[in-house]
Length: 142
Image (cartoon, rainbow, N blue to C red; front, side):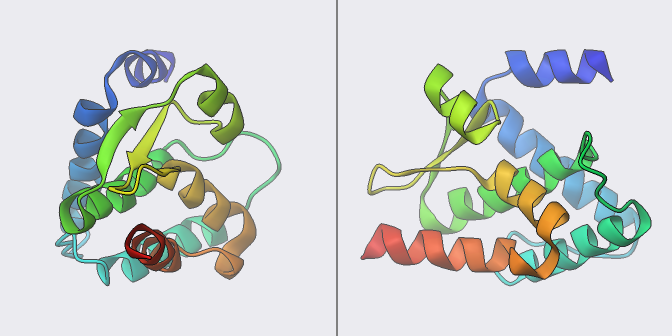
């Protein structure tokens, strides 16, 4: 796992974000779930995270590494459907968000979809990647 963490920390967001999202699409396809990068598909990701939460409940320790990929899928939906761009976080943003990269919407705001997936896992239905998408898109337009 250390090797994967090293790759994540060294890759550029515009390369790694889409790659992690593609991993989610491939993984879910093997399970018979088709993800098409539509905003509504984020409801499926929320349910997948809920299943993960059920089988591996949060303990306050390290979170399952696949959560980063689920968050990247949410970021890629925003990239493809709302024009957001993948960005590497600077040191202050990495410290604040706890992630190495995220997205920037057309209005210049920076968002943390990877962290949102972790929050869904930790808090359950109080957090949602679908609602996150709707909030980001609404703010980017408003």
